[in-house]
Image 1 (cartoon, rainbow, N blue to C red):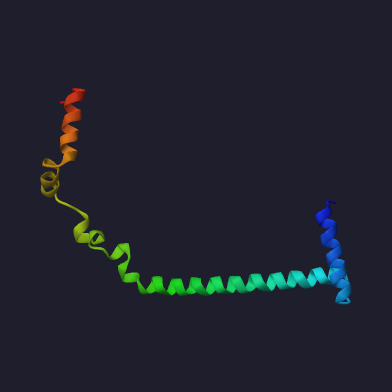
Image 2 (tube, rainbow, N blue to C red):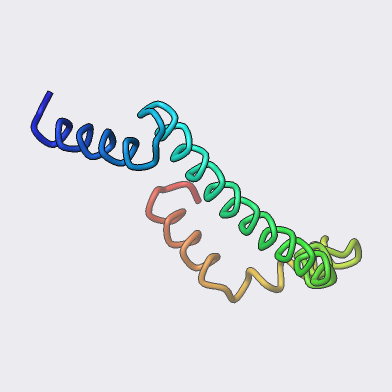
Length: 105
């Protein structure tokens, strides 16, 4: 036992004697106070969580699924659209440069 523990025990004994209880009873009461404080903090956190959940539900129309790019008519491109996009893009230039350098032409 170190010195600090001995001092804490002596302080608890003095406090228990002052309140006319035992040390065990005092420790129990202190644990109840700590438990109540944790319950209050948890309750506050749950209240904030419910508030956040409600705000997320209200913003449901702004989710990624509601964007135009996820609609069925915009999900797929024709071969013509794809070829037109790739013919002047840097992707195709890089592909052609690497293909020529590798000798796969």
